[in-house]
Image (cartoon, rainbow, N blue to C red; front, side):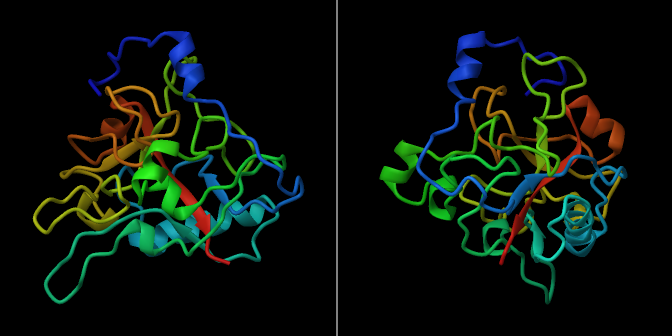
Length: 226
């Protein structure tokens, strides 16, 4: 995505990627997935995975789901004596439900990552109307009033795994607010010529101002592992 110069896609195209897939599920299923409603505010410095997880816990507790164990969907790079961590391995097995209690199909781990050809073709319910904050609010994306906030930090490849050693897309394992790069997905699955919720593009820096120039503010996904 070019910095804040993305042409507005056709409205119909956006709608095509924002429709939930409905199924018969429990309308009162608890919230086990959300996008952070607010950033930590220090660019790519999230305080490492521990700081990001703590942010998920704080927001979930404020929404009445503090009894769960929450993990940020973030990958890290390997370091000498310290293996990298893949985002998909941090979040448990699911399934997960968004903040709005309705009969939407839940998120399934293998589906959101397209683990099989059938699942990749079928897709998942990871759309704009499902990728809500813990308050049940949608994230402003392509075609919405500014500021755009759809860049969601992940540091991960499309299959949910960490990038190879030496290809740091994690702002130095989520401790840098200056140099580096962060891989981001688009919560509305629009822009940058692809529909990836978790691996659309890399930023060219890790400061708060840089994240904002790319169409984000430093939000990330949170999943309950229990």
